[in-house]
Amino acid sequence: MTIAQVFDYQRPETLDEAVRMLSGHAGEVRVLAGGTDLVAWLRDEAIAPDLLVDIKQIEGLGDIVDEGDAVAIGSLVTFSDLLNSELIRTRLPLIHEMAGTVGSTGIRNRATLVGNICSAVPSCDGGPVLLVYDAAVYVVGPNGPRRIPIHEWFLGPRETALARGEIVTKVVVPVPVGGHGAAYVRLSRYEGEDLAQASVSVLAPPDHLFRLAFGAVAATPVRARRIEALLMGRALDPGLVAEAMGLVREEILPITDMRATKEYRLRMSEVMLQRGLKASVERLEGTGPSYGTNLM
Image (cartoon, rainbow, N blue to C red):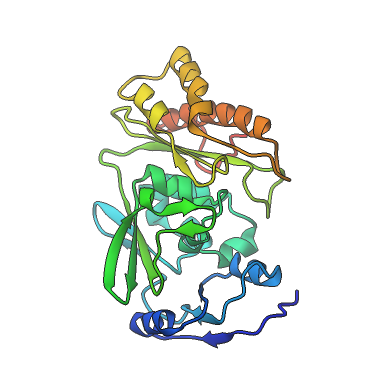
């Protein structure tokens, strides 16, 4: 692979130093963490940065921290780190399940959850999962730190609420009180390094206040508020699930591209919702397929 571009490269050792580099440069600046998206974009000349700021030397950004009612995931935490974390497996099983669907082992060893949502491609796997957990993105920049709710993060394809000069330090994920069942259902053409054709995240707390989100079927990951309202506080039965499936077309706006037609994405999103609801409720009850089982 050849990258025929010229750019400056800096490797700060502290967050303050990184922020000064990002905010003090007049040209286009990009942050390098895992680099699995960034390097591909450089190769394809989709971006042409003047400065690349490599944050891998900054201490603390690779930590997963139990904060009691939440789990903080640092910006250098890879998908493999998530898969290998007992804390993630037990407290945030949906994130654990999602991490196992991303790319290949090599990709998971490099790619980070934060980088995944910073790339903000419509098919990003982290987006729908963080939406149903009501996560928040923590950033620091020239004007100090700030907290961005995940539902305000995605502004469009490859566009986020991150301001110039800011860098993400962590994502904080609240742990639902009383436990929860969940399911990440992903449709792709083959196993391995393929982007999702469509995805559904389902979170089922004991009170049946379901949280749902779709990926790869709109310009950004989307929370399914209409379906959530329909299901609110109600026990699932075949008729209710059928009603929920009927609302999918009001929640998403898929397109036709090289990976799938919009009609296929629409129909399969209905099927994925059905399977995700069933699996999440069964898992809440201690039955059903084990996490990591392919539901498609």
